[in-house]
Image (cartoon, rainbow, N blue to C red):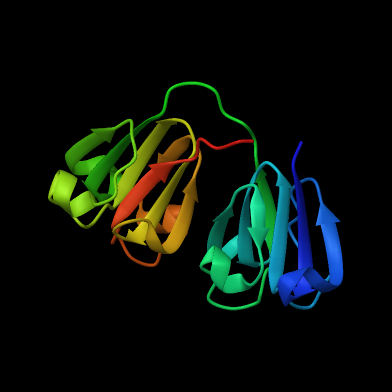
Length: 175
């Protein structure tokens, strides 16, 4: 099982809240989040309730302020525990919505979508195995989007505001 601790102040100070499962609304437990300690598992934390807004992937470790998890601000309102996955990783991405246009299949991390596939826009995808994170920019930077197995017919299905994807990686570190 997972365990994550949210702290209102930097450097693990101030009011805190421990969580070991998904929570759709953390607002009643703390007003802001400036540091996080992940003691077990992998987590996605979200800027807004009900798993919406900016998304951040956190694995086991200490994040002494929100900039250490690439956060844009000190607002965390929901969290999702990522269940361990054992199996093959496989994903198909498409240049058009509804699985149209050129299809690209992958089973590994990609630091630059443009360099590897000569595309910068991904409009739909089908995750057939594993958990993945899309990043807006190359080299795993920028806004993050969590994808679990399933069909994503348009980019807004994974929470994005545009089809621009610069890199992606598998979530494999479940310690």
